[in-house]
Length: 126
Ligand code: THU
Image 1 (cartoon, rainbow, N blue to C red):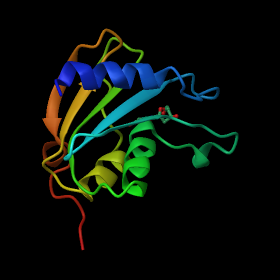
Image 2 (image 1 turned 30 degrees about the vertical axis):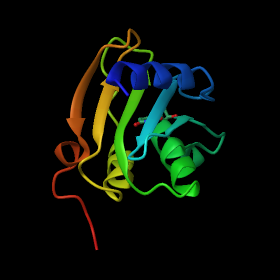
Image 3 (image 1 turned 120 degrees about the vertical axis):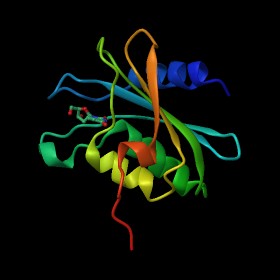
Image 4 (image 1 turned 180 degrees about the vertical axis):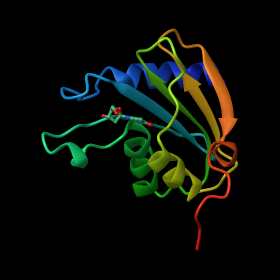
């Protein structure tokens, strides 16, 4: 799958974001190593700390379906800047390997690309 397609799926997933507190809607689309796509959006809560990022929603959906290896993930927000994953999402993605490519997109679908290992060097691991 082309990066542009994954970015487009992330922008689509963003439309279901539940973000009434931050008004910052995020979408993610995660491509498993065997070619399936899992999407996610951020889901906020009145108890702010219980909110969940789009990337982790997508990743947890995939893990629940038995996926353990990921080729790429696209993350998109409604900004002109590229949307970069937060530190918590970097750590959670790193759990499944630093090789995963991360496409960080803006509202127009333009993106920059790095790997998880580049985004989180020296990640914590046991
Ligand atoms: N957010 C994500 O969904 N992914 C990130 O990597 C960064 C932040 C969400 C969390 C919160 O709902 C909103 O963006 C503002 O921080």
